[in-house]
Each structure stands twice: as C-alpha cells, then as structure tokens.
Length: 285
Image (spheres, rainbow, N blue to C red):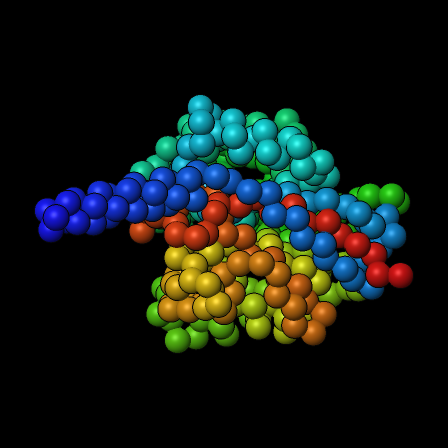
C-alpha cells in the first residue's frame, strides 16, 4: 500500500513538471498583440486613430521560419507606421542576416523607424548593420528627428541613441548627460512629440522635456512576473522594477514599455508572454 502511494506521488510530480514545462515553453513562444489607446489633447486632428506598431528587443530570436509568426501578426495590426526600439540583434549571438531580413519584411508592411539599444552598442559591426537598415529603406534615427504627416497635420518622431554608446551604466552623471542629449535633439516647438528610447528607467527625464509619448523596451517585462507583485527583475532598474511593461503617465507624458519579442541573458520568461505593441493615438475632444 505504501509503495502504491509513493508511485502516485511520483507520477503526480512528473505530470506537474510536464505541465509546468509546457506552460513555460508556450509562454515563451506565444506572442500576443497588446492594444493600447493613447489619448492626448495635444494630438492634431489628422492623427486621430493613427496606429503605431512597436517591436522591441527581438534579440535575434526566431519564431517559425524567418519570423513569419511575428510578421503575420504585424500584417493584421493595420499599422500606419512601425517603430523598433532597440536590441534587434543580440551581442552574444549576432545574426545580422536574420535581423536585416526581418526588417525588410516590416518595410513591406508600413514605413519603419529604428532607434538602437544597448546590445547594438556592444558590436563592432554596428556601423554595417545601420547602413544595411538604411539601405532597405528603414529610417534610422540616431539623436535625430523627423516629421510625419497625416491628414494634413504633422507630428515629430525622435530617435535617441542609447546611452551605452557613450557612457557606462555606472556613470554617476548619467541622468545629467541624458538631459543634455535630450535638450540637443528635441525641437523647441509645440508639435506633438514621440520619442523612441530603449530605456524606460529614464522616464523622469523624458517628462522634464515635455515629450508627449515615449516608446521603450529593455526591461523584458521583468522576465518573471508574479501575481500582485509584477515583474521581478529588469536591467537598469533592478528587482521589482517600476517600469517594465504597459503604459505609464506622468504630467503630460505617456510612456509605453514593451515586454519585447525575444530574450537575452536569462533564457526563460515566466508568466510573461512576448508581445507586439499596437498603440492607437486618440485626439481628446
């Protein structure tokens, strides 16, 4: 009788481990489209219901052959533009051909704009990567801004070079240097402004510069998400990060933080599906 009970316990444990493994694997490959509405009085009428698809932190991940799963999801998102917020490649397993091929498919869907991340700062091949993106029609924004037009109105799209390109993570004057960087690249006008910046931990600096909307990534959703507590750890923020997913609002600035598509470092997401963001801009009447 005791032997039978041991067998039942062992079998139950094996089934539990199997179910848990399937759940984790599915959670790492089941990409979701997350729709977010961003309401603003400052948004011009011509951009009411304008749709922006955000891809972040691909990290050379593959979802089916040539990332067809990701591409098909984006095709169905009815995007007006696509923005990429860094870490398309992974410095530990660089696959430039895959990243460029993926970018080409995005360009076939909608005009695409790219701003870099910390992983791009680590590779010697970055100048070549940037040149190849530009060569296929991607607009690479490195501390630059461009005007986007819709319905006779225009807004300003700004791309920020990741701070890892010019300083260490431990730099004590990091925020001060980022403020100088933002002051240099943000136009001094009343236009609705969208910033592409890999770093959500710098939210307070974006608020100081009166940016209307920020698209960010980097945090990977906190990697492991605990009910009621949220994400466990994010680079740049540490344990139980404040900005690791979703939309955050302070004063007149909204920041959308993508959980990202791929992974780096710790290989598994737990209770934290990879995502593609679809942001719809809404003019507040």
